[in-house]
Length: 400
Ligand SMILES: *Cc1c(COP(=O)(O)O)cnc(C)c1O
Image (cartoon, rainbow, N blue to C red):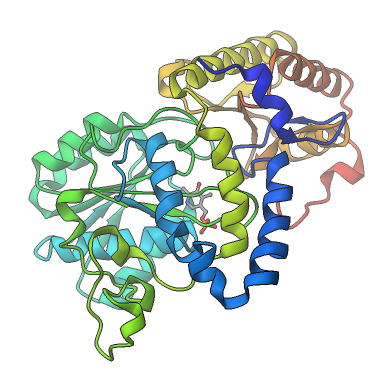
């Protein structure tokens, strides 16, 4: 069991703020401040270039990958951190397509986060081999797997829809994709740290995710990639950077991929960001993912019930069945952007996704019933008195 009263003080949250946006950017772990300061002062400052060996900087991408591995059911030595999620999607997809040279379809869905689809489009264009990307509605993916059949090269899905929080039945979809001989890339952006995931048990081929959302690694924290051990020595990295080479410091003029997951490394790892991520993972090391999921469902249900009872103008955009949801709840409202700005001005932070989605993330490590009740009461007040209808709440900022 995890004591969620004990995890809350491990985060530095501004006084008076109810933070329901940890699904987009997790808050600062208190210990990250000292850990980063020590990395700057004692490692970079004192060790200079010897830090790569002495402070273990070069091994961090694997070490941190193993700790994320525990949260996603990946065995040690199968996950590595680095780059951004967009890059990791590209790497996984390029490798998967190369493993299925006779097939032409990449199946995703219309709810996928745009960057995953953009990266796929760019890759398809540079490969120029006639691949096509299909994006049916999320509920039609299973039928499409069967319809495409043996032309399906890769099923590339983000498990939880970033707008609605709808969750795919990944074990069933992975089985169906494997039955037609396709490979699966599972994007865990809204899964890792939101609930237990098991990439080994479900036999996923590739998994990718970011560490600045539920995992609280900080803005710009590196992404991660998992490759099933049965494939790890077969994949040919499209981004064949020197740190994925078998012997980077041999400075061999020819590329030769490193063993297993090491070949998914690209270039120099982000040492300062990894120090913050390390502090975040110190917290995750203590968390029981089943207990986390139970809490998350309780908080989400309480929020849905409270908002539906007090805000008749809002419509639930997330599945009502908790089993079909991630750890976020979304409501539709025509003036959702303005209503969210009004909420933020009152210390309740969620976010907005066009065209009309108000999005709220529930993260039991630092959110409790008191936060949920405060968010409901504040939202109810804004709606009842049309407090969102002020010019300053309608002006759009660059990041929503
Ligand atoms: C957040 C998110 C991203 C972000 O990609 P970056 O390269 O880290 O900016 C990508 N894909 C999905 C599904 C996401 O939710």
